[in-house]
Length: 314
Image (cartoon, rainbow, N blue to C red; front, side, top):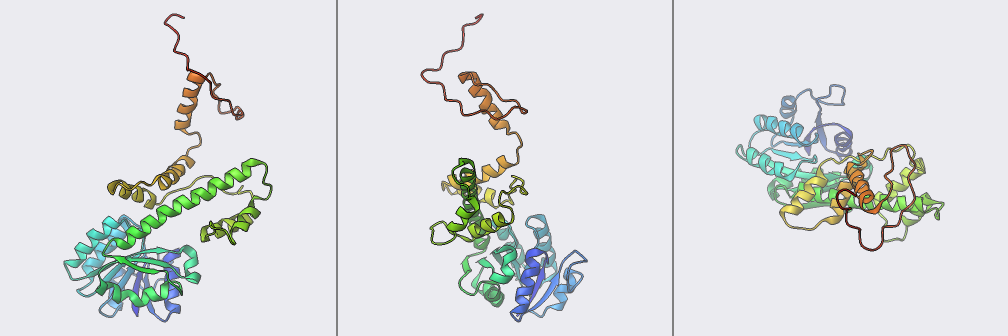
């Protein structure tokens, strides 16, 4: 098929290459003039494509995607289809679909997973939209996905990005569990070959996964992780997952804890833990450590009843 691709970054550029290798004609556009783009504007992109057109948007979520979809709405015609393959929030999909529908333009939301490895391995695709519009993009989906599985038409508009949102929330939880396990192994003093332990888990165990394979790869490159700063950003999907969980009254304690752990990673000296330390000092008589003092050993909690505060004047 013929397809326009807007956004030729790490993901978009590799997707364009995989599509071309699969025999499709790709007309690429990126606002960055140094990118390997085929046209210099969205208008030129639209003019180059035969009708009915399919244009896949792979730009950052939020305002960049919204602006791109609005501009395409002015340029496209009835029968054309816009695919949002970025990490947009599913609520944006509903707005975009309604806007485009007024001109007879179709809309498909595609949650894409695979990262920089997708060119070689294929991309997992979670798609939302009407059957008719999905069918117009299906040849591209068939080329982008892995050779076996990896594609689902998850439901109506918004279902693709909602599925990808939950996927990323689960990813938060798995990554956090691996991280906590690593820290315990490292801290124990009993296990001397921590990278080898993780490597052994990649075969035959119930916790093997591609994320585990990537962790082993990272440990091969930096066994003690000295080059890595303990800072973990979040791109929004974890927050959106928890907001949806609250809306639907679905308990998600593991994903919530994983998200909050990322927040904690950005604090050099957590204000919350300062409060905890101060309170323990008040009721337990523990010394409060200053920033330039070594971390003390574990102090037993006080036993018995907590003594009442002294009477005034004592």
